[in-house]
Image (cartoon, rainbow, N blue to C red; front, side, top):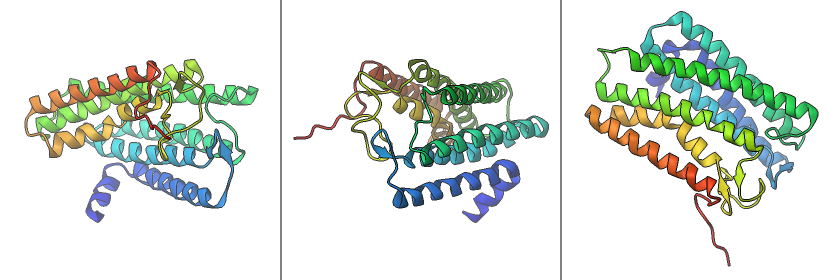
Length: 257
C-alpha cells in the first residue's frame, strides 16, 4: 500500500493531496453522523456530503493515476486546478447546506437555485474537459501499456463522461426520483429508493466505470476483445438500470410485512 501511495504521489502530487483532504472530509462527516441528529428528507444530513467527499476522493486519485500516461504536464496541471476548484466549491456547498438541514440539490430558494446552477455549470465544464482526455486516450497509441488495459482506460473514461452528462436529466426534472417524491424508504447509506425509480443508481454505476473498467482490463482481462466485450456488457447493464428508473421501478425493491 505504501508503494502504491508513493507512486500515486509521484504521478500527480496535486490530486494526491487533494484526495487526502476529501478523505478527511469523509471522516468528519461520519463523525458528525454520530454527533448530529439534523435530517434532510428523512435521513441524517451528513450522509450526503460523506458520499460526495468519498466519490471525489476516488475520482481524483483515479484521474491522477491515469492522466500520468498521457505525458502532458501543462495540460494536466490546468486540469488539476479545475478539479480542485470545482469539487471544493461543490463539496463545501453541500456540507454547508447539510449543517443547516437544507437541500443542496434542487433547492428552490433564490440563493439555492443560483448556487446549484453554478455548480452544474462547473461540473459540465469539468466533464467536457475529462471527455477531451478520453479523446486523447482513444486517439493515441501507448506502446508501454498492455492493450487490454488501455481499452479499459478508454471505456472507463468514455462511460464516465456519458453518465456524468446523464446527471442533467435529474437537474432538468429537479429531482432524482421517478414515480414519487424524493425521500422515503431507500437502500442503507446509498438511499436509492426502494419504492420508486431512482436515477442516482445509473448515475453512480456509470460514473464509477472510471475505476471498474481499467481495473478489469488490467487484472482480469488478458485480451483486448475481452475488455471491449465486457465494457459493452457493462454499458448495457447500466443503461438498463437507467431505463428501469425511468419506468418508475426501483433497482432493488423491499417488501415489508
